[in-house]
Image 1 (cartoon, rainbow, N blue to C red):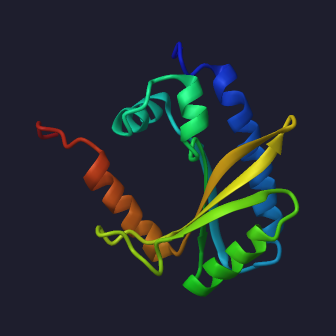
Image 2 (cartoon, one colour):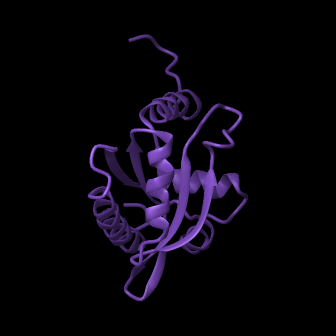
Image 3 (cartoon, helix red, strand yellow):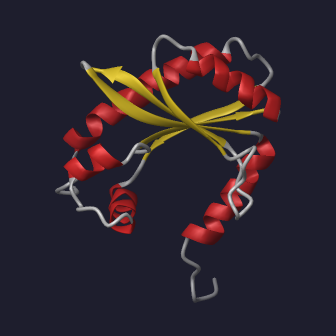
Length: 161
């Protein structure tokens, strides 16, 4: 068990993912045929440590809580860019979460070619508002993101087979 990022650290994020996933399911019911997949994840302790280190921040639960907004993440793959924006609009109007900001990498792709719409939302958990990042993509954007992630973030083995 990680001494810094313990089960107690993760507990509110697990519950935030559950709350946000229910919100996504409710929105999905209005988008029959447009939602391809919905997934979620919690950032691993190693990933949290790496992100804090890259930002020059202390490796601590307090630093992660105050600085990182993507510990809890959800992804929705929708059929078209238009459905991505319509789904985002619906989520931003939800009474079960608070919209914080959007990063539109569809209109403004990253230099790598990465495209998606990221929404930062906050959901209530035991009287606290916990941030969740919701990534909205099309199947083509999702495929590109997976290839880019594997090429940029996964170590390449130096031995064959």
